[in-house]
Each structure stands twice: as structure tokens, then as C-alpha cells.
Image (cartoon, rainbow, N blue to C red; front, side):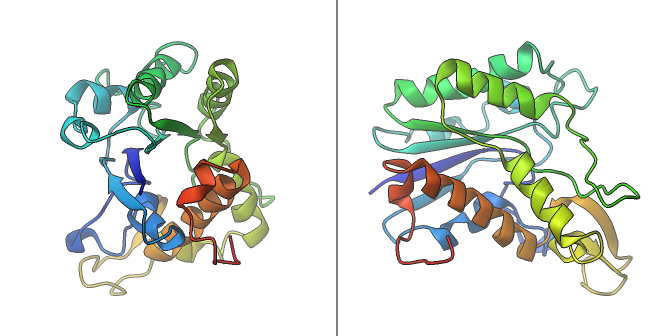
Length: 229
């Protein structure tokens, strides 16, 4: 039996009732996995690859990381911010911090998987998604190629899905809803970054499909009877 550990930011983190319906990808990823697979979501809202590592949020959980497990690594949203405790340079410190997680996984005999940051739902007037992550996704892809690390380009996959779905129809996947829809959001929300539970399930499905395409041993954690993957 394998365990999938997630490290990342709010787009993959576990949420509780007070922020419902906000939901992270790691929170619902078990919907695509076999009953023998355990999910441990170590992601934290607001953290970058740097701040998450420096604060050692995950130490207690990742101490349990062992041979044959998997570590999914998805950062970028907060690495872009100017705050010195979070900012990383996509050409230098960003891949350096990502590599710390990769090295940790490998030292435990686990399989690291890099994931580019989820695309934000920011549309241009001609129906295209803005590349708000600039060169951060390319930095992940470059590191993956250089260090021979399996990589899922979630930024590209989510961007393509959002563009094919359209601005209005994709709102339901994000924290984008009118006032009084949910009791704990009386003023509504127009958040194009954080996922609604529906969106988390959809985006987790993109990750699961990409994991399936990686083949064994990565695909072995999935529910093989699920035809939709």
C-alpha cells in the first residue's frame, strides 16, 4: 500500500468547514485513487516553495515518507509574490527550493512528481487565459527535464480546459458566486484563483489522467476501474 503526500499552496491544500466550498486538489484526489492508497495533504494556504520549506510545516508528516511512496510538489502562486519570506526567482531560488523536496523524496526511496502551478481563471477579451505565472511553469519543466523528474504540466492542462469551457461556464469551478449563495460568504466571491469543490474534483481529474499516462509505478495508485481517467 502506497501513500501520496502533497506539498503546495492553497490550490492543493485541505480546507475545513469555515472556508467551504473552497477545496484543494489534494483534498479530493482520493476520489481517483484505489482504496489501498492513502493521501496525506501537507499543503498550506499562502505558502511558497521557500516559506513552506523554511517553516518545516510538513516535517511531522514527511517523516513518514518511505520507500515506494509518492511526493507531489506544486508551488508557484506565492513564489511570485514580493514578500521576502515567500518570493523565489524562477531562474534560481525557485528550482533550488523545488529540488529540496525532490531530494528529500529520493532520500526516503519515494517517487517525486513535479506539478506546474494551476492556471488562474483570468480571461482576456478574446477568450484566452492570461499567463499570470510568467516563467514559473517553464522553470518547473526545465528542472524536471534536467533532473529526470516526472512532471505534470497542470498549468497548461488547466489553461486549455478553461479556454475550451469559456469564461462564464468555468466560473462554477472557482470561488466565484453571488451574494448569499453560501452562509459563510454573505457578500459572495469573485475569486479566480481558489477552487470550488466542483473545480477541485475537475482539476484533480486532470492530475489523475496525467498520472495514468506516466504508467507504473505512478499509475498504480489509481482506481483502475474508473473509465473516465
